[in-house]
Image 1 (spheres, rainbow, N blue to C red):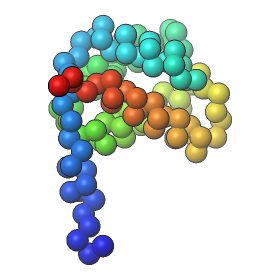
Image 2 (cartoon, rainbow, N blue to C red; image 1 turned 180 degrees about the vertical axis):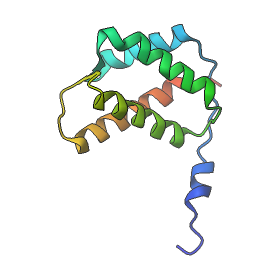
Image 3 (cartoon, one colour; image 1 turned 180 degrees about the horizontal axis):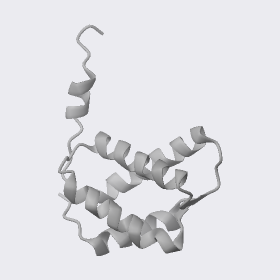
Image 4 (cartoon, rainbow, N blue to C red; image 1 turned 60 degrees about the vertical axis):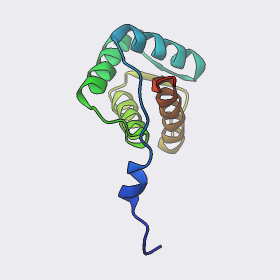
Length: 113
């Protein structure tokens, strides 16, 4: 354990993400929300997609673990504002649900080799 470094672990999870545009983001989240029991309210959906797109353009980091944390935090932020429709009320359950969805999103963001 003396040689363990969390920062080294974070640096080992780099992936290459494909290029994004706002339409790809909308399409991705439409599929994600249709698959999982979580949904952004209809009147907020476009704003949510634009926020995610802006984040992706602003943060030029290819670290998958950091992106999962960012996406999970984004879901919690939208949930706190009342913009999410979710079946869970417990934050522990939400954290697991958001983490699963964040993992699915990062998988869809990967560039095909």
